[in-house]
Amino acid sequence: MQRRSLLTAAGLAALVPATRSVAQGSEIVLGHTGILNGPLGGPVKTMLAGAQLAFAEANARGGVSGRKLRLVSLDDELKPDKAVANYEKLLNEHKAFAFFGCVGSGTTAAAAKVLKESGAAMVGGFAVADSARDKTLGSGYYVRATTGREAEALVQHLTTIGISKIAVAHLDNPGGTEALSLIDAALAKHQLKPLAAAGVKGDASNAAAVAKTLAAVEPQAVIMYLGGPLGGELMKAIWALDSHPSFYGMSIVPGELIAKVVGERTRGLAISQIVPYPWNEVDPQLKAYRRLADAAKVPVGYYSFEGYVNALVMLDALKRLGGEPTRPRLHTALRATKLRVAGMEVDFSTGQHTGSRFVELVQVTREGRFVR
Image (tube, rainbow, N blue to C red; front, side):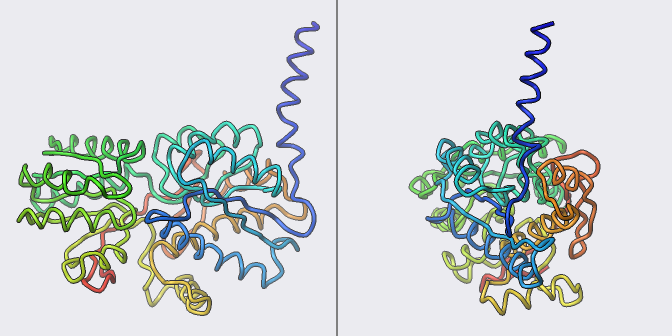
């Protein structure tokens, strides 16, 4: 009996952080940790700038249930131990109510325990691999389609147009290795496998060696899972070997940056995108996003629009909490989320950790613009 009482007490104690976690005072603090500097930090800062458009507009209208939103962002350099320390700092020092747009696979997986113990939800993770999403099930709510879904869409397109000789270049980190395994799985469904695959270091120091490995197998196409300007450096290195495959990027490949690296030769690069075309002239939510972006001098593009979409999902859930926002109630609201954003369906009501399956392929022009 005493042991049962102790176990019951321990179980109740474990629930205390979640049940007592109420947004205090006149604001709701959202915490963010991710890489903010270097070549991989640019897209993250652009994504956050897009999110701030939606949060600022909400604040201008009085906030959520009278509380203003404040986003606190810390740099973790994509280091798991530093990310965990940031999560704890955001919770304990900055009094974060929930997390938003946190970045990276290894960092997110490492923080799964902190998220679970705190009861805090994390919405709109950025560049988080499918396995890391699984580890945060019940805590993380990812808007963008999974990497596996992107891989399937790209491979389906390539096989449809008759391309079967495919090589893969991926980030030389755990997230990149997992992306490769998902591309392998997508190819296997068509009885194919990569002719060659190689990881590119974050500073592009081995780009020439990777280019040599890939060019040697004479691929028709190279699928790239590379952030920042890395894709552009690899493309130049492959061309220098007089090899001219088609290049297909997953959504972490920033077409605008690639255009700055390779110039007019960017044309023909195709990228899978996980949010709708930001330059759509018809959709009212896209018009509102562009109006806000222009006023705030935030670049209109896929990364800032993804941040804006993620923020709309967060705001939708927060608005359904009423006058006393608590972490358990936020989870309940998020699990009931089913909405349409700019033509994209976001649905967590099925119990999945990922809300969208939206993927479409676009091409990059020599100026770094996108065409459907």
